[in-house]
Length: 183
Image (cartoon, rainbow, N blue to C red; front, top):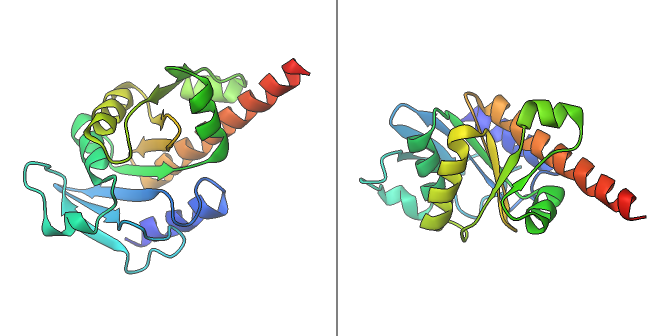
C-alpha cells in the first residue's frame, strides 16, 4: 500500500496526472489494491481498497474503487502485469487525438524502449476500453486511451511508472518535433 501512495505522489509531481485524475493498482495474488474513485493521487493515505481480480465475483468495495476497476481487472487477466498506473498527461492525450491507431516515437530511446504506442478507444471505465486496453497491453507495456490517458503495466509499480513517464516523454518529443517541422 505504501508503494502505491509513494507513486501516486510521484505521478502528480511529475505532471503525469492532475491530483484528482488517474488511478493506481497493484496485484497481490487474486486480489488487487486500487485507489478509490475521486481520490487524489498525491493524498492516497486511506484511499486504497482491496478488491478481487476476478470480475466474475465483484466485491461490495467495487462501488468505491476507481471507476477504471474493470479496466485494471481486464489488464491483469490478459497480461503478466503486477502493477498498473493510469495517468492523464498532456502530451500523451494530445498525441492520442492526433494519431488513429498508434504513435511511433521519434527519439532513439523511446523507439528502443517502447517501439510504438498503441492508441485505443473506449469511454471511461467502459467494457470497450477494458477489452481494448487489455488487448493492446498483451504485446506492449503501455497504451493511450484516445483523448483520455495512458495505462502502463509492469512487474513492479516502479516499472509501470517508468513506462508512464516514457510514454509522456515520447509524446512530448514527437509533438515538439512535429511543431518544429511545421515552422
